[in-house]
Length: 123
Image (cartoon, rainbow, N blue to C red; front, side, top):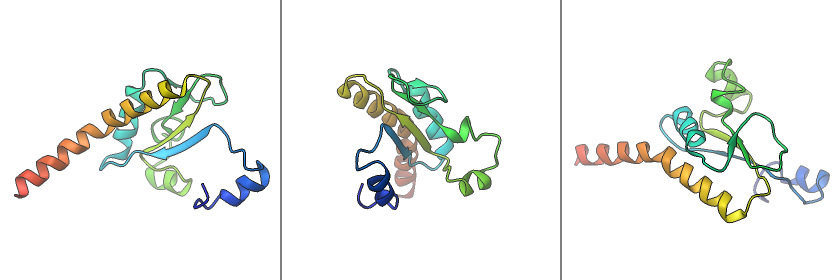
């Protein structure tokens, strides 16, 4: 996206074509738990460390590939607790989006309940 700090490199090296890798974060008080819940809630998408498959793949680096590092070292390496890496495959776009939406709802449901309880107890 144009607002991203890496946009100029993407335009220069990939000629504006981008790629199938999407990185995003799950916003939650406990990002690591929410990221794990997101992965566990996926139905179509596979949870594997490799990328570049014909299937849609996802990984939560904080609890898998970078789990041996402490949170401070992870942060220095650009790994946030709720970060998810998604390699988009060849499945139907509507199916991929539905799977991701379902997993986001599941990953953030506990956070929403917590926020509601906080509001109600403070009222």
